[in-house]
Length: 338
Image (cartoon, rainbow, N blue to C red; front, side):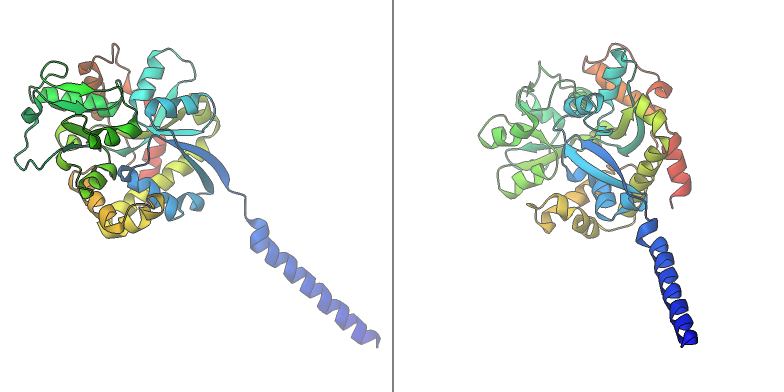
Protein backbone atom coordinates (compact mmCIF):
# COMPACT_ATOMS: atom_id res chain seq x y z
CA UNK A 1 0.00 0.00 0.00
CA UNK A 2 2.83 2.39 0.96
CA UNK A 3 4.66 1.52 -2.26
CA UNK A 4 1.52 2.32 -4.34
CA UNK A 5 1.12 5.65 -2.53
CA UNK A 6 4.76 6.57 -3.20
CA UNK A 7 4.42 5.61 -6.86
CA UNK A 8 1.28 7.73 -7.20
CA UNK A 9 2.98 10.67 -5.48
CA UNK A 10 5.98 10.38 -7.80
CA UNK A 11 3.66 10.27 -10.83
CA UNK A 12 1.79 13.40 -9.71
CA UNK A 13 5.08 15.26 -9.11
CA UNK A 14 6.30 14.28 -12.57
CA UNK A 15 3.05 15.50 -14.18
CA UNK A 16 3.28 18.79 -12.26
CA UNK A 17 6.92 19.28 -13.23
CA UNK A 18 6.15 18.54 -16.89
CA UNK A 19 3.28 21.05 -16.87
CA UNK A 20 5.51 23.75 -15.43
CA UNK A 21 8.31 23.09 -17.93
CA UNK A 22 5.83 23.04 -20.83
CA UNK A 23 4.39 26.36 -19.67
CA UNK A 24 7.82 27.93 -19.50
CA UNK A 25 8.64 26.64 -22.99
CA UNK A 26 5.47 28.01 -24.56
CA UNK A 27 3.11 30.83 -23.57
CA UNK A 28 4.71 31.69 -20.24
CA UNK A 29 8.05 32.48 -21.87
CA UNK A 30 6.64 34.76 -24.56
CA UNK A 31 7.38 38.41 -24.01
CA UNK A 32 4.53 40.85 -24.62
CA UNK A 33 4.79 42.74 -27.89
CA UNK A 34 6.12 46.30 -27.73
CA UNK A 35 3.44 48.67 -28.99
CA UNK A 36 4.60 51.31 -31.48
CA UNK A 37 2.25 54.06 -32.55
CA UNK A 38 2.89 54.74 -36.24
CA UNK A 39 1.29 57.67 -38.04
CA UNK A 40 1.30 57.43 -41.86
CA UNK A 41 0.82 60.53 -43.99
CA UNK A 42 -1.99 59.04 -46.13
CA UNK A 43 -3.37 55.61 -47.00
CA UNK A 44 -2.01 54.67 -50.43
CA UNK A 45 -0.91 51.55 -52.30
CA UNK A 46 2.25 53.59 -52.85
CA UNK A 47 3.26 52.27 -49.42
CA UNK A 48 2.75 48.60 -50.32
CA UNK A 49 5.98 47.34 -48.64
CA UNK A 50 4.71 48.69 -45.32
CA UNK A 51 1.31 47.01 -45.65
CA UNK A 52 2.96 43.76 -46.70
CA UNK A 53 5.15 43.89 -43.58
CA UNK A 54 2.06 44.49 -41.45
CA UNK A 55 -0.09 41.81 -43.08
CA UNK A 56 2.66 39.16 -43.18
CA UNK A 57 3.44 39.63 -39.48
CA UNK A 58 7.01 40.88 -40.02
CA UNK A 59 6.66 43.41 -37.18
CA UNK A 60 5.34 40.74 -34.80
CA UNK A 61 8.37 38.61 -35.68
CA UNK A 62 10.47 41.46 -34.31
CA UNK A 63 8.38 41.64 -31.11
CA UNK A 64 6.47 44.74 -32.23
CA UNK A 65 2.75 45.52 -32.42
CA UNK A 66 1.91 48.45 -34.70
CA UNK A 67 -0.96 50.82 -33.93
CA UNK A 68 -1.47 52.52 -37.28
CA UNK A 69 -3.16 55.90 -37.73
CA UNK A 70 -3.39 58.14 -40.81
CA UNK A 71 -2.52 61.83 -40.54
CA UNK A 72 -3.84 63.05 -43.93
CA UNK A 73 -0.86 65.32 -44.52
CA UNK A 74 2.85 65.48 -43.67
CA UNK A 75 2.29 68.53 -41.46
CA UNK A 76 -0.32 66.65 -39.44
CA UNK A 77 1.91 63.56 -39.14
CA UNK A 78 4.77 65.71 -37.86
CA UNK A 79 2.44 67.45 -35.39
CA UNK A 80 1.38 64.03 -34.09
CA UNK A 81 5.03 63.05 -33.60
CA UNK A 82 6.15 66.24 -31.85
CA UNK A 83 3.11 66.25 -29.57
CA UNK A 84 3.69 62.64 -28.50
CA UNK A 85 0.59 61.24 -30.20
CA UNK A 86 2.76 58.77 -32.10
CA UNK A 87 6.24 57.24 -31.73
CA UNK A 88 7.19 57.14 -35.41
CA UNK A 89 6.07 59.28 -38.31
CA UNK A 90 5.90 58.21 -41.94
CA UNK A 91 5.82 61.05 -44.45
CA UNK A 92 7.97 63.16 -46.73
CA UNK A 93 11.37 64.12 -45.22
CA UNK A 94 10.62 67.75 -46.05
CA UNK A 95 8.66 67.86 -42.79
CA UNK A 96 11.87 66.98 -40.92
CA UNK A 97 13.80 69.71 -42.78
CA UNK A 98 11.23 72.34 -41.79
CA UNK A 99 11.36 71.33 -38.12
CA UNK A 100 15.17 71.27 -38.08
CA UNK A 101 15.39 74.74 -39.60
CA UNK A 102 12.99 76.04 -36.96
CA UNK A 103 15.74 75.35 -34.44
CA UNK A 104 13.79 72.79 -32.42
CA UNK A 105 16.14 70.96 -30.05
CA UNK A 106 14.34 67.61 -30.15
CA UNK A 107 13.94 67.56 -33.92
CA UNK A 108 12.90 64.63 -36.13
CA UNK A 109 15.56 62.29 -37.52
CA UNK A 110 15.04 60.08 -40.59
CA UNK A 111 16.13 56.47 -40.08
CA UNK A 112 14.59 54.51 -42.98
CA UNK A 113 13.35 55.26 -46.51
CA UNK A 114 10.49 53.43 -48.23
CA UNK A 115 9.81 55.16 -51.55
CA UNK A 116 12.24 56.73 -54.02
CA UNK A 117 9.99 58.51 -56.49
CA UNK A 118 6.94 60.72 -56.42
CA UNK A 119 3.91 58.44 -56.27
CA UNK A 120 1.34 60.75 -57.82
CA UNK A 121 -0.12 60.65 -61.31
CA UNK A 122 -1.51 63.46 -63.43
CA UNK A 123 -5.13 62.77 -64.41
CA UNK A 124 -6.74 64.60 -67.33
CA UNK A 125 -10.29 64.80 -68.58
CA UNK A 126 -9.64 62.64 -71.64
CA UNK A 127 -7.02 60.33 -73.06
CA UNK A 128 -3.80 62.03 -74.19
CA UNK A 129 -1.66 59.26 -75.62
CA UNK A 130 0.93 61.77 -76.83
CA UNK A 131 0.89 63.78 -73.60
CA UNK A 132 3.67 66.28 -72.99
CA UNK A 133 3.99 68.43 -69.88
CA UNK A 134 3.90 71.43 -72.20
CA UNK A 135 0.23 70.52 -72.81
CA UNK A 136 -0.61 71.97 -69.39
CA UNK A 137 0.27 75.53 -70.45
CA UNK A 138 -2.79 77.78 -70.19
CA UNK A 139 -4.64 75.13 -68.18
CA UNK A 140 -5.58 74.63 -64.52
CA UNK A 141 -4.19 71.79 -62.38
CA UNK A 142 -5.57 70.79 -58.99
CA UNK A 143 -2.36 70.29 -57.02
CA UNK A 144 -1.41 69.67 -53.40
CA UNK A 145 -0.64 71.60 -50.24
CA UNK A 146 1.94 74.38 -50.62
CA UNK A 147 5.25 73.26 -49.09
CA UNK A 148 4.37 69.57 -49.40
CA UNK A 149 6.55 67.28 -51.53
CA UNK A 150 3.71 66.31 -53.92
CA UNK A 151 3.08 69.94 -54.86
CA UNK A 152 6.74 70.92 -54.96
CA UNK A 153 7.68 67.94 -57.14
CA UNK A 154 4.80 68.68 -59.52
CA UNK A 155 6.03 72.29 -59.85
CA UNK A 156 9.60 71.07 -60.32
CA UNK A 157 8.62 68.74 -63.18
CA UNK A 158 6.58 71.49 -64.84
CA UNK A 159 9.53 73.87 -64.57
CA UNK A 160 11.86 71.28 -66.09
CA UNK A 161 9.62 71.34 -69.15
CA UNK A 162 9.48 75.12 -69.39
CA UNK A 163 6.04 75.51 -67.82
CA UNK A 164 6.18 78.10 -65.03
CA UNK A 165 3.57 77.62 -62.25
CA UNK A 166 1.55 80.75 -61.64
CA UNK A 167 2.54 82.18 -65.01
CA UNK A 168 2.05 79.52 -67.69
CA UNK A 169 -0.24 77.24 -65.69
CA UNK A 170 -2.65 77.84 -62.85
CA UNK A 171 -2.32 75.44 -59.90
CA UNK A 172 -5.03 75.18 -57.24
CA UNK A 173 -3.37 74.52 -53.86
CA UNK A 174 -6.06 75.45 -51.32
CA UNK A 175 -8.03 72.19 -51.28
CA UNK A 176 -7.79 69.49 -48.63
CA UNK A 177 -5.94 66.36 -49.77
CA UNK A 178 -9.13 64.29 -49.52
CA UNK A 179 -11.17 66.83 -51.54
CA UNK A 180 -9.11 67.09 -54.74
CA UNK A 181 -10.59 64.09 -56.58
CA UNK A 182 -14.13 65.18 -55.76
CA UNK A 183 -13.44 68.71 -56.96
CA UNK A 184 -12.11 67.37 -60.27
CA UNK A 185 -15.17 65.14 -60.73
CA UNK A 186 -17.37 68.17 -60.08
CA UNK A 187 -15.75 70.02 -62.99
CA UNK A 188 -12.91 71.98 -61.39
CA UNK A 189 -9.65 72.13 -63.34
CA UNK A 190 -8.30 70.51 -66.47
CA UNK A 191 -5.96 68.15 -64.62
CA UNK A 192 -5.53 66.82 -61.09
CA UNK A 193 -2.51 65.23 -59.38
CA UNK A 194 -3.62 62.15 -57.46
CA UNK A 195 -2.14 59.20 -55.59
CA UNK A 196 -3.25 55.64 -56.04
CA UNK A 197 -5.69 54.01 -55.82
CA UNK A 198 -7.68 57.27 -56.23
CA UNK A 199 -6.25 57.99 -59.71
CA UNK A 200 -7.15 54.54 -61.05
CA UNK A 201 -10.57 54.61 -59.36
CA UNK A 202 -11.31 57.90 -61.14
CA UNK A 203 -10.24 56.29 -64.40
CA UNK A 204 -12.38 53.22 -63.67
CA UNK A 205 -15.41 55.46 -63.10
CA UNK A 206 -14.83 57.17 -66.45
CA UNK A 207 -14.23 60.50 -64.73
CA UNK A 208 -10.67 60.97 -66.02
CA UNK A 209 -7.61 59.40 -67.64
CA UNK A 210 -4.11 59.03 -66.24
CA UNK A 211 -1.83 60.90 -68.64
CA UNK A 212 1.53 61.01 -66.83
CA UNK A 213 3.55 59.86 -63.82
CA UNK A 214 5.06 62.73 -61.83
CA UNK A 215 7.62 60.38 -60.30
CA UNK A 216 8.85 59.05 -63.61
CA UNK A 217 9.90 62.56 -64.64
CA UNK A 218 11.16 63.90 -61.30
CA UNK A 219 14.12 61.56 -60.77
CA UNK A 220 15.11 59.62 -57.64
CA UNK A 221 13.99 61.48 -54.54
CA UNK A 222 13.50 60.36 -50.91
CA UNK A 223 9.77 60.77 -51.19
CA UNK A 224 8.53 58.98 -48.09
CA UNK A 225 10.53 57.92 -45.05
CA UNK A 226 10.25 56.92 -41.40
CA UNK A 227 11.38 59.35 -38.73
CA UNK A 228 11.20 59.89 -35.00
CA UNK A 229 12.43 62.45 -32.49
CA UNK A 230 16.10 62.58 -31.59
CA UNK A 231 15.25 61.73 -27.97
CA UNK A 232 13.11 58.69 -28.89
CA UNK A 233 15.88 57.44 -31.16
CA UNK A 234 18.52 57.60 -28.43
CA UNK A 235 16.29 55.98 -25.79
CA UNK A 236 14.76 53.28 -28.00
CA UNK A 237 17.51 52.29 -30.44
CA UNK A 238 16.67 48.59 -30.09
CA UNK A 239 13.00 49.16 -30.95
CA UNK A 240 13.88 51.36 -33.93
CA UNK A 241 16.25 48.66 -35.19
CA UNK A 242 13.56 45.98 -34.95
CA UNK A 243 11.10 48.29 -36.72
CA UNK A 244 13.61 48.89 -39.53
CA UNK A 245 14.25 45.14 -39.83
CA UNK A 246 10.54 44.56 -40.44
CA UNK A 247 10.42 47.33 -43.05
CA UNK A 248 13.44 45.82 -44.80
CA UNK A 249 11.75 42.42 -44.89
CA UNK A 250 8.68 44.03 -46.46
CA UNK A 251 10.88 45.62 -49.14
CA UNK A 252 12.51 42.29 -49.95
CA UNK A 253 9.14 40.54 -50.16
CA UNK A 254 7.74 43.12 -52.58
CA UNK A 255 10.82 42.91 -54.81
CA UNK A 256 10.55 39.12 -55.10
CA UNK A 257 6.79 38.76 -55.68
CA UNK A 258 4.33 39.48 -58.46
CA UNK A 259 1.87 42.36 -58.63
CA UNK A 260 -0.99 39.89 -58.04
CA UNK A 261 0.66 38.52 -54.90
CA UNK A 262 1.37 42.02 -53.58
CA UNK A 263 -2.21 43.11 -54.30
CA UNK A 264 -3.51 40.16 -52.30
CA UNK A 265 -1.41 41.15 -49.27
CA UNK A 266 -2.39 44.85 -49.27
CA UNK A 267 -6.09 44.15 -49.90
CA UNK A 268 -7.08 44.34 -46.18
CA UNK A 269 -5.94 47.97 -46.13
CA UNK A 270 -8.08 48.84 -49.17
CA UNK A 271 -11.35 46.96 -48.62
CA UNK A 272 -13.27 49.04 -51.19
CA UNK A 273 -10.83 48.37 -54.05
CA UNK A 274 -11.17 45.20 -56.13
CA UNK A 275 -8.11 43.01 -56.68
CA UNK A 276 -7.93 43.77 -60.39
CA UNK A 277 -7.63 47.48 -59.63
CA UNK A 278 -5.05 46.85 -56.90
CA UNK A 279 -2.98 44.72 -59.29
CA UNK A 280 -3.10 47.47 -61.93
CA UNK A 281 -1.90 50.04 -59.40
CA UNK A 282 0.90 47.84 -58.10
CA UNK A 283 2.09 47.30 -61.66
CA UNK A 284 2.10 51.07 -62.21
CA UNK A 285 4.36 51.57 -59.21
CA UNK A 286 6.59 48.70 -60.25
CA UNK A 287 6.89 50.20 -63.74
CA UNK A 288 8.20 53.53 -62.42
CA UNK A 289 10.49 51.85 -59.85
CA UNK A 290 8.70 53.66 -57.02
CA UNK A 291 9.91 51.56 -54.08
CA UNK A 292 13.37 51.76 -52.55
CA UNK A 293 15.28 48.50 -52.69
CA UNK A 294 16.78 49.23 -49.27
CA UNK A 295 15.83 51.53 -46.37
CA UNK A 296 19.13 53.44 -46.80
CA UNK A 297 18.80 57.07 -47.88
CA UNK A 298 21.55 58.55 -50.06
CA UNK A 299 23.00 62.08 -49.76
CA UNK A 300 22.38 62.61 -53.50
CA UNK A 301 18.64 61.96 -53.18
CA UNK A 302 18.29 64.31 -50.21
CA UNK A 303 20.20 66.94 -52.19
CA UNK A 304 17.64 66.63 -55.01
CA UNK A 305 14.77 66.96 -52.53
CA UNK A 306 16.25 70.17 -51.15
CA UNK A 307 16.79 71.46 -54.69
CA UNK A 308 13.11 70.81 -55.41
CA UNK A 309 12.19 72.68 -52.21
CA UNK A 310 14.40 75.64 -53.11
CA UNK A 311 12.98 75.78 -56.64
CA UNK A 312 9.49 75.96 -55.09
CA UNK A 313 10.64 78.83 -52.86
CA UNK A 314 10.05 76.77 -49.70
CA UNK A 315 13.62 76.41 -48.45
CA UNK A 316 16.09 79.16 -47.54
CA UNK A 317 18.73 77.03 -45.85
CA UNK A 318 19.79 73.49 -46.71
CA UNK A 319 20.28 70.92 -43.95
CA UNK A 320 23.42 68.78 -43.78
CA UNK A 321 22.69 65.11 -44.54
CA UNK A 322 24.27 63.79 -41.32
CA UNK A 323 22.21 66.18 -39.21
CA UNK A 324 18.92 64.91 -40.58
CA UNK A 325 19.54 61.25 -41.48
CA UNK A 326 20.82 58.34 -39.39
CA UNK A 327 21.45 55.37 -41.70
CA UNK A 328 22.82 53.17 -38.89
CA UNK A 329 19.58 51.21 -38.48
CA UNK A 330 19.00 50.82 -42.22
CA UNK A 331 22.56 49.61 -42.81
CA UNK A 332 22.24 46.99 -40.05
CA UNK A 333 18.90 45.84 -41.46
CA UNK A 334 20.39 45.40 -44.93
CA UNK A 335 23.28 43.43 -43.48
CA UNK A 336 21.22 41.15 -41.23
CA UNK A 337 17.83 40.73 -42.94
CA UNK A 338 18.06 38.52 -46.03
